[in-house]
Image 1 (tube, rainbow, N blue to C red):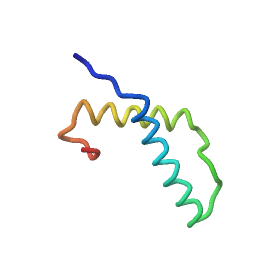
Image 2: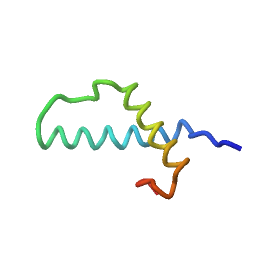
Image 3: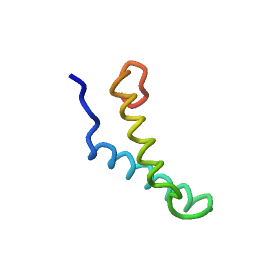
Image 4: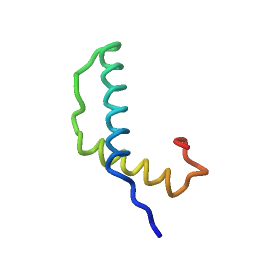
Length: 61
């Protein structure tokens, strides 16, 4: 049975990346905020889906 990625896990990864982005911008300069939040969410979902599908080759395991 195929397991789906939970919305909670995707949102946690989005939050972590957004926080990291803010720290980088604060230290190095640039524009605040994520320009494409939907794209970030989609990318996080794809990363987690790949990680679950191919866990031996995933950097997240």
